[in-house]
Image 1 (cartoon, helix red, strand yellow):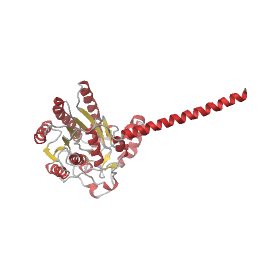
Image 2 (cartoon, rainbow, N blue to C red):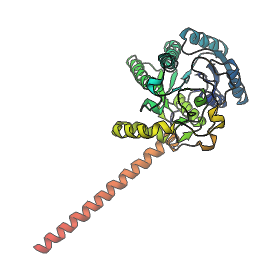
Image 3 (tube, helix red, strand yellow):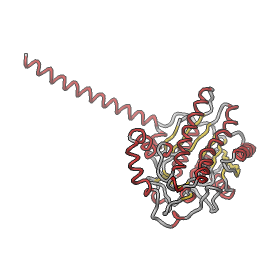
Image 4 (cartoon, helix red, strand yellow):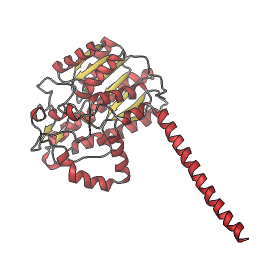
Length: 352
């Protein structure tokens, strides 16, 4: 059994951070499904490359250069895209940057700049989207968070803080929408470690090139999760079993995660590989200077499928299997109890 919610007719989707990685992959997927795609990022050249991906997928795109930390520029980008494509049905807050290093090695201005992009950029995008969706009482805002929104990790204190904050922000605004009986939907997508150029773009204070901790997944899996979140009224979508495990383990055994993150988290995020992993193109304070791409340098180890995503898309089948399992356990328990009771009765009769 598959997802029962009927997706809306293809309309207009806007994706921030659309010039590479997850955003670029999602743009192509929406285009293949018949959507008109608005693309926002800071690099005109890399946006144009994404627009070509959309065209190759049979779609129509509109591009707008804007920094999501600049609310006025983001509003102007939305006006431009609506003028070319029409009213916005889905807004995906995907733009994000990274800074790697121990907290005391990260400068105050670097910490602030990441927060302005990752946290306030999403806040700005949400406001721009809701200005358009609330009067029409329809639309979906998709927040791209992270497994890290459930568990902070070493070397990424500003990133961890921004993703935790966004989860609280989203829950608060969602509750306000519920109070207003609004049909506008807000949802969260939590990717695991993903093979994108993010690690080449991140500013780093580490002695070795930074890398995603394994297991690593391809961005197309996250794009699929974004499409699922955008076209069904899911509260959130955890993209991989690693993400789900992070959330559950941090709730049940946070002290154990403290220990393992401290012992292994620093080395797991640094690479001994050379080549493409070591290519630096930091984009914290401005767009990268190199041509970007959808994939990062970890294709050889990245997973192209996710059992958790299959379960996300087939909740009916998962529920049926769990139900049958519980029934089986109940029958087994009943049979065991009857057997134990019968033995006791036989002993009693013999004594009489």
